[in-house]
Image 1 (tube, rainbow, N blue to C red):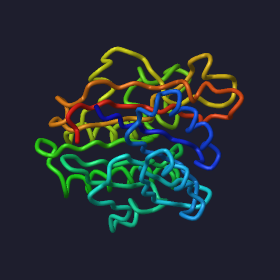
Image 2: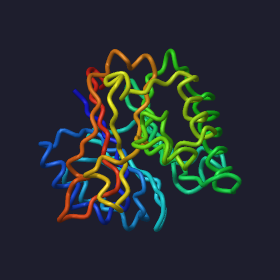
Image 3: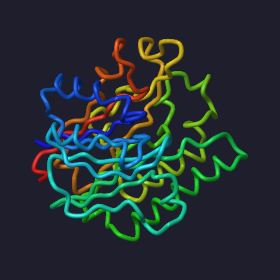
Image 4: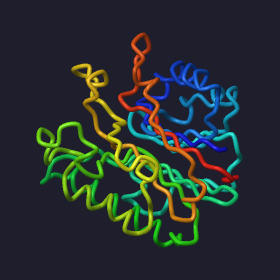
Length: 264
């Protein structure tokens, strides 16, 4: 069994103690940790910390903002952080690794803004370029691909605690959702919904107003898989333990974890 976690850590340097406690709480069962918003340069990233926990890390760094990384107990065959596309490569939002038998893509999609705005346009264009890159390299019916990360978009109103209040807000805009569903139309499956077709489960809660305790959140962190991986998927869970910490300030996201059999 291989467990892959996607976790927007909202600053890795602020979250190392929490990550250590979380992994101890889980008896170190996470095999691959895909992180977003690491907010660190290569010099600032705690490689030694993760090495001590048995992980090898590759990162796409950026100072103060954004940044992605994959820490794995298994060596990758290849790592890519630059695609050659100026929009997709902007702001360190992408990292890809090839493993024996499957491909792993970790993204931190732009947050965007309400239209009309440059940030809204950038988010839409970024998603378009991501799909172009994927489509130019993979076949969804043949290749085993895991696409995970903070997508900053909900699939539908079931992923929103109050669809009326948050109607046409960032993360629920129809133009954003169309880009997320374009990935599904290409050939990805929502791993969480394969396991939990009817469950309402969030992955992000605003710090303000104790929303984690009121369960007033959004499901914006996703793990998508192609059809050839469907038979390998065993479970998907959102672990609320690190989000509910009080004495150690948590990220505003909770990690989402997918379990696979016969993956490596």
